[in-house]
Length: 269
Image 1 (cartoon, rainbow, N blue to C red):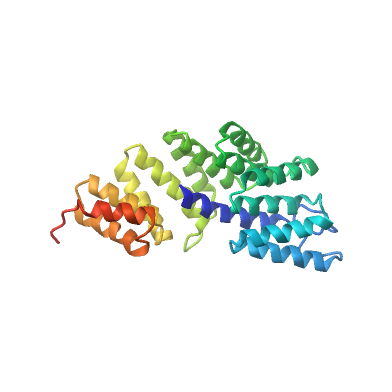
Image 2: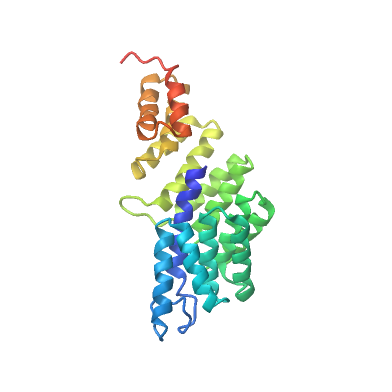
């Protein structure tokens, strides 16, 4: 599940950056459009956002911390700092940053959702669920994120039917694009994995293939599909998908598992 978290974290980052200026007053530095002065601060924050969107987590953290030295109670910057800490897997620091943002603005829905992610990474599932449910109460908030996070939470607790249903809800709420987007891939992966755990192999195989149409490099989908094909006594198809994983990243955990699985595959083609 690490890949799905990473992919959807990028989506959370994109949403937070896009919204960071919208909920602030026009004179607040987090309004990166700089409508009323403070252009240098707006530019600094924009540069920090760019670092975070590129996955340069530590650099983004340092930039947000510098910004917050001037504006220590800026809720948008505190939210983004929390996301950069999440990106660095510094979960306790992320929680502290999100909580500080909520002290300034208790109704900041995006922070509740992100705080839930931080709690979930620490396996504090009751607090995570509480925060996701708070986020869902906001009628104007993009609900795909909280639904996906609740699905991931259910999956972590081996409640696969609930995970499947919640992931499907997230899939239905993500805006559809012609070529697919990472935020579409994350709930679809979770939906597919839930079907696999429920032993609904035919449906899972269809879902994994749909995912590979969106994200052809998704190794977890290729590996899972290979495993399903092996279980359905289609060794040549299984071999094809195992080889995709091996060729893409032979030293990864999934690459090593695929190499081991290939030793038992008997394909005459």
